Image (cartoon, rainbow, N blue to C red; front, side, top):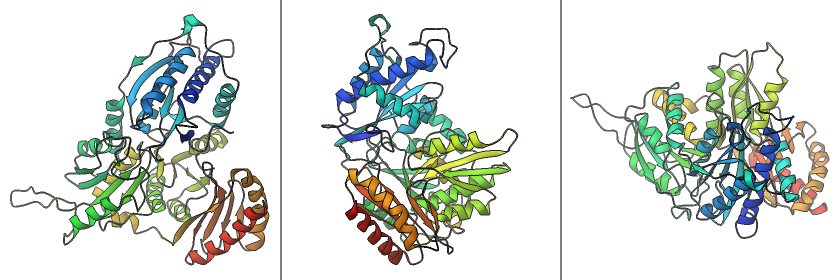
Length: 495
């Protein structure tokens, strides 16, 4: 597809994600929904008009980008002229919009961690992102310049405010894990994004003492880049390290003679991206905890406590083997799916399980992004923050990390024009196995090499940028990356 990438539609607002495109996508989504809720092949049995049934209602929200209001107005116009009911939710974290799309549809205007010059469109149905078939259907309607609904079926948007209900549900869900926070001190860098009205509120409701950085929503992202990385989180890391200097057991209250007392320093810290689907964890020393270690900790916990005979964790090809190790130790198995398609992986596992099998997807995640399947089918950094905080309160971050084997990890990008990616990857499907004959090879989602010593490497084309990505994890990661990178460069040059 040309319109949809690995995370919906995303790009610059001056030449790609324009109001004209938002209008066209809104109209196409409206037409697709109407085709599924009306007529003899309708998916819904609701007898009311297509534009007013819950199944044909669309919740529309945006993140804090300055271009959001214009795109929201255009999208709303397209949806209304497409004949579906629109519920205007204003600014929300993406997981809150996904939560609000249960039993209906959702449109989220966000470019997630991209710079402020970009924006994007993510589509949801019943709490999960559109699958490839639905995205293709919308893209086809956009290309065909879908006509509007009859004039007397146009709709008028109504206002809705789903944030409070979402936050309440997050708190209730997280309460099933770990221990009460009881004054646990946590720093949260909201990055001027949509986690600002969400994560600090949830943690405080659960009993934490929270200090925020960049806690106002500002679509220019003045505090730091929207993508939370070790570099952009430098201020947060230094803030935590300085606060914890000379403090024993930081972040935990020390009862005084009267039985109460304030905590010093921070037990850990959190960084979010612009729409609060990503999460980064920073330890008490101000160091970023590797994203795959966070994933492994959660995957093991969900597997061990699931009670299922066949617990499954869905992840992506670029995720570390440390996840497989911890899930196997807990009695489960890992299934991998292409990047950006966790929801499709969940559906595939469920569809392949036979009646009576006790197969259950207990967790799904790719680095930085987690789906808490028992809570909902969407990526949710706010829920991750709440669950991790309660686990830290119970056991401590160091104890949670201790069982995870952390091998050196690297990711590099090799420049590759978009029109050369397919040819280059075809060459690599042969060249990489020939260069590494002892490796097990998987070509379902790029080319993944797995070695007997638990080292691995993955080569895949970027879905949004002109690069071929190389990921590797090994005790001698520099040598492995250098060898793989050279083969990739040769394949690109010959493409």
